Amino acid sequence: MNEFALTLLHWFQENGRDLPWRQTRDPYAIWLSEIILQQTQVKQGWAYWERFMAKWPTVEQLAAATEDEVLRLWQGLGYYSRARNLHFAAKQIVEMGGFPTTIEGVKSLKGVGDYTAAAIGSIAYDLPAAVVDGNVYRVLSRHFGISTPINSTEGKKEFALLAQNLLLPALDREGKGAGHYNQAIMDFGAIQCTPSSPDCANCPLMETCVAFREDKVGELPVKLKTLKVKERHLTYVYVRFQGMTAIHRRGEGDIWQGLYEPYTPPSLPQGEEGLSLLRKDVKHVLTHRILRADFWLWEPAERPVLPDDYIWIKEAELDDYAKPRLIELLLESLPY
Image (cartoon, rainbow, N blue to C red):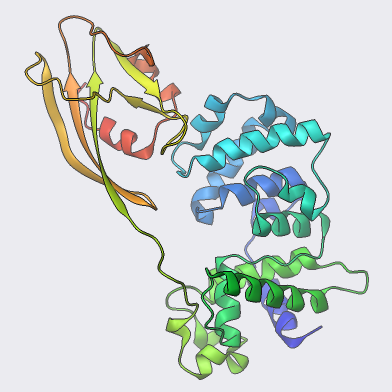
């Protein structure tokens, strides 16, 4: 076993995180944790994993749920395409007759890429596939002094090859141990070799770390700036009529697909009786855009005619519908 892997495994034995999905080899539980932890910190995702496992202990039960139920339980995590993909993949698994047991089989699931497949395959089945996530990119780029941008085609290939070459010598004589090693390097990046203020003074890899030796810890890893952030303005009108309100479900091809929101008029019904502004220009930041929203309350004397895709529900039942975080924030300003 190479010294790099040996050091990581020893560190992991002393410092590894005690997470509930590490107490099982159930691929369903492991897959669920990996999907939840995409774009989500462990401390937030942990509670959601427990809720999902409590409500749907098996993949068959998750597949039998409705999309609305899944989105409702996911509410607050953001990146809702993950929830829709999770639900779709659960149905795929049931149709397959069980969870796939090969890397390619796992990759065939909706929403599963190279990293997630390697994580699930190695942890659940000990398949010899190296994970490469943000933590791994950071550890490898700093330790080996690699300045190739991690989000470039060249960089992805370079780091994937390096990660695999480091994993294989870490396996035991029976070819086992991939899951243990993968979790070790991910935890090392999450706890020791952090994005900012890494604990270099107490790092067991300090003496062989190129970035530390050359004072480049803050410069690595390198990432190309490719994201263009756009602004978008939204106007919401919360219609209140005799204890009822109107909502509609967002369609495909836009943000928040499948989630519910209040009335979004083509133009504000100015001069309408019972119309009042509750919040103006509320800023909400997503990955690819900045949203600015105005929130109005409309309490008409007669029930208004709205487009056919709106449904009327009791205000008390509003919590039963999955909503974007921005809508949740806006609803907090409603007078009762």
